[in-house]
Image (cartoon, rainbow, N blue to C red; front, side, top):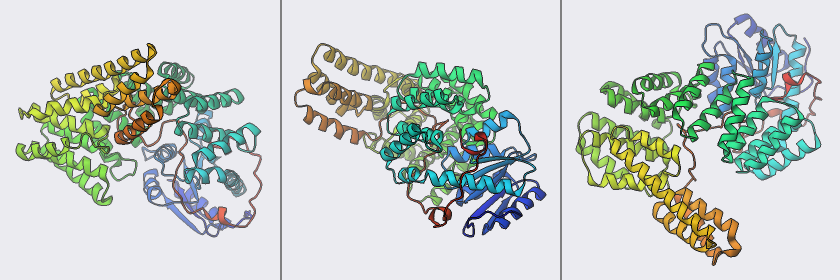
Length: 571
């Protein structure tokens, strides 16, 4: 048995393989290499539970599980998408499938290695060594990322890309992700295009589309995505981004079809089933939505990938269908999630919404009204976000549908509409939340028209050569509505015409204060809580203990000259 020449005595590993013999061989090889602790899992779903709550130095995972709906690729995809696999972990797929599509799929998921059965121990040793070498070489970049020094990390990536230093393509991909995070989509787009020019890669083409989308170039992004999907109709991440583009254009029917395709390609992906379920809910198909939402709950309730908003939507559908027991289960499930994460304000808000639905179901309208009135008192607070707005509108629509008329509800709808209806997709998303009482949807659309009128009036003033009054006008209406679009327009005008604006510094201070009051700038709709944009690498932040091999004084072995589609993630 060949032994690797660096210390693994403090490392731990997880072997995931449904075949007991194969699993035993891998475990033995790792122990021969000196790995201190080796855990095992016979199914991908069992491995997922371990990976959600433990960190491993190595994960060796089989691609295909005959009796399991989830493949090794599905497992890795979900872990990456939901930020559950730290940079320090080496993830190697081991499989008997050697087709180009499988290898390409593995590379797209940022694998550290891809090995074919049967393999020799020396080959596994080389893969482990090479993967750890790459991680050590890029440690400076990822230390900066984890400490949230994003500008520094982006500069390091660009330097490595420009000098063609080792792992320059991987560094380019990380750098582009950082530029998108730093709201510099044009620079990210340029970097992605440079990668495409240097080496045509699907993830780089998808990155161009993502950067275009972030820059507001939605039609260009859609065209790029259509071309990419024409080249590879099974590229699931591309469908995710296409769905987002269609959603932002307000083409909910098209987005629904796209999310269906993404979910059909990866049926065990909690994130994609969740997206499909939520999009079906907003499309108004209550029966289909209830089935998909229930499937999502059964598939992922105990997973960190699960979005608790799913339970809220499921509760609304069960109120509509009169499923009292099902609604109570939604409430109980949310309380269990809250028990696990006591003090989480978002979970508490969601639990309050479902509690109010329970009161409506039980015809305790007086108590339900008191709960809703308490919520309406928060609509101008910084913590009141778009998700809160949609849930409150849906609650008020249910009360009005039940003939519980409250005069202040229409005023609250108008306040929410003027605050959040910045574009068509946001407006239609909130209007869908009000489907139980259509007059509220009409008021929301009227609020968007009013916001658009405010923006157009300011633009007309600016075009007439009076940017000072344009900015003051936007600040006035921004303070009244707390609409992020109006406030951001004021900011952009000040940036562009600062020399022509009287008291520009004072006005900029006002704009910054309004931005702080609004909370996060909302400029696009999104079904559920987005943890990571499709097609991007996960950039985990927050300081964590470095893995043993990065703390060791022992020198790392040199990188092996292996094929790039087997070694370097995405390259």
